[in-house]
Amino acid sequence: MKETKFKNTEIGMIPEEWEVKKLGTVFDIGNGRDYKHLNTGKIPVYGTGGLMTYVNEYLYDGETVCIGRKGTINMPQYHNGKIWTVDTLFYTYNFRKTDVKFLYYLAQIIDWNAYNTATGVPSLTSRNVSNILVSLPPLHEQHRIASALTSIDNLISSLGKLIEKKKNIKQGAMQQLLTGRTRLKGFSEPWVEKKLGELFEIGNGKDYKNLKSGPIPVFGTGGLMTYVNEYLYDGETICIGRKGTIDKPQYHKGKIWTVDTLFYTYRFKDINVKYLYYLSTTINWNEYNTATGVPSLTSQNILKIKVVLPLEEEQQAIATILTKMDDEITALEAKKVKYEAIKQGMMQQLLTGKIRLVS
Image (cartoon, rainbow, N blue to C red; front, side):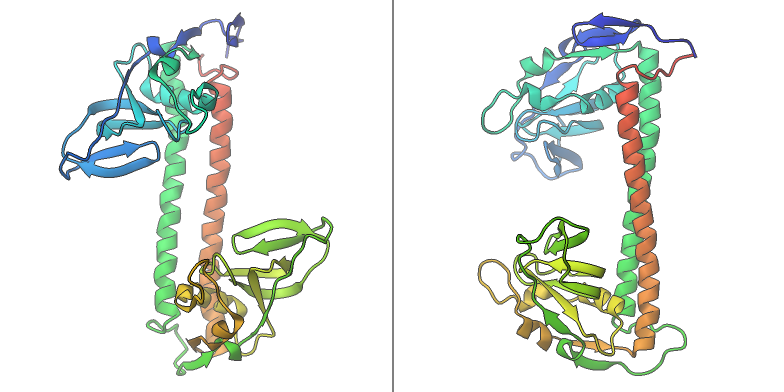
């Protein structure tokens, strides 16, 4: 691979073979339109947040990079085919010596907020967009860069689809195993009805602001909040929202602190804690909401909830199966995050010429 020589330009150092151009010399900008007069159909309608609905007519047909005009201006979109865009989303067309997919990736590293023209809702004008300066490699290099980034995008997309498939399989398994519709081999004993109050006791979370920083995680109804130097509970527990988000139970193991809006459970009896966690995710907690404003649960209401349970040995077997599924999903999600980070690194290197895909 030959050594890259750089030149100084108005936007910084770029490879000698690259050019600085205004976006307005690379493409034209089209304005989105209202779609409410159209009938339902198969043509996707996009806004700055993504897909909105489907209609029977199209505004543009072909490859395009859509750029937010108002609202979400920092999330460019790539589309290929017949589309309609609403008034808050520009589409681009009439591309000149540019690989459209390359342009999409280039658009992702532009700081669009730097070109915001409004003091309230973020906004861009077609003139401002057209005047943005970018560095462009020769067309053959654009193709190679776009191909490399598309390959990793496809991998990330495949992982995302696989994760969703695994989650759906797990959800189906929960519906079967946690209701007794499907029994595991070797288990035939009848299930019994119990109140949650027969299975555990409930502890109240406390304020943590008087504590110092440390290694102990602090959890609220939305999940991890911070770390402190003391713990409120040590061991396996199911945390249940007291106020706010009441329908997202959490499983924790080890030393933790919970805030006032999050109950923790302890002194478990005749129950596998991990099984209880999976069971708790199937309970309609909003049915037990005691407030008309912010959703709220009381410990008394929780302890009165009735559930049907197998014996503890079968609970353990079910929890083991579901935990393995969770572990597999977690591993895939970590892999997806890793490839997303790799993609970001590739974009920063390839789209600036720091790494070249030329011989």
